[in-house]
Length: 30
Image (cartoon, rainbow, N blue to C red; front, side, top):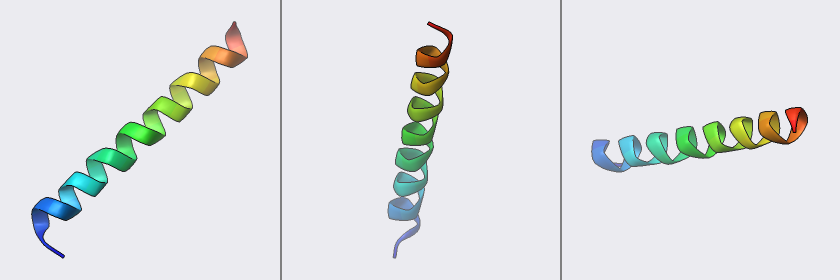
């Protein structure tokens, strides 16, 4: 596994996690 691929996966999973947390928080407070 190349470093660029690992970095891309990390960014993708971080973005997914942030969107899930943000969406859950928004749904909870709205």
